[in-house]
Figure 1 (cartoon, helix red, strand yellow):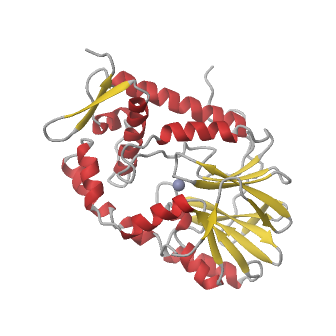
Figure 2 (tube, protein in one colour):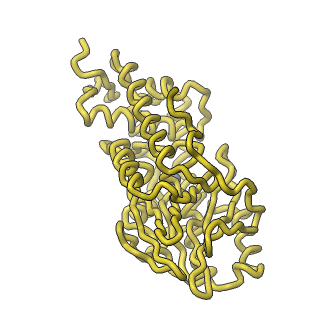
Figure 3 (cartoon, protein in one colour):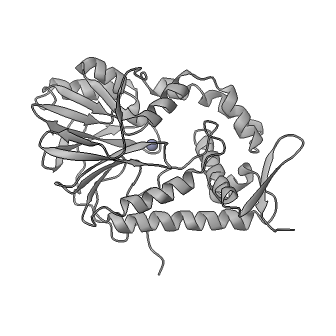
Length: 344
Ligand SMILES: [Zn+2]
């Protein structure tokens, strides 16, 4: 019987926190849930007691409803205490979105890795032409390519600002937050230098999007690093997190807190092995990423989902290409196609 997604996963907190309310999931660690206007309709944020104040981990998307929830929280008894610092796990808008605004409100510093800050600053300032061209070379055409024109502005809309000054988080660094030490473990593949925080005294891992209980973390190649191999980096990160104790309580950015870290890591590794095999099988004939997207995502995709589905397809193609299992060619129009190496 193949490993199922839920095998070995236990969710010890059946109830969800109400809007602008929290649930304590470990001593001094509180779960906060904010809405998202997407198919993925929520994000988990975390508050860690830090002396007489709060360390906030991730901030939610830049939207008025989420700003209102933060203001309600800060007016209430709990977050009425000062915010000592804001930790941003990675550059995606649902995580960094309100960091600059919240840091301004609370007059505190922001902590994130340099790799995440670099990408956030670039996406916040760039125009759309580069990415349209990138997707065109990977075979996207017609209405799907035209739809990319609107995608460019979404980062600036969903992120309130990227602070020029920040405190740099480093892999292996230990942060004293309140009564406990938290070690930064940098995960890779979902984003360049995704900060996760592990507290061995509490057996807790603040995992962000690096390890999720019910969905597989998105892995993309986009124009920012067109030759990148994030699948390799993600698989290597799975091994790294496998060194953490089996009983670790994982606090993910989506879904609910869970134990069963090791079975989940095994499931994610198997998921990507199967996807890579699907891509290899499809590449008996020369295929571009837009073809592979149809193989990997048989459901109908809306214009919001196309860039992610394309990015994921290119990531799996690039991985097989870098391993030497696919070769790549470019036609007269500059469209890239991949084929199994040794295929006639
Ligand atoms: Zn993310």
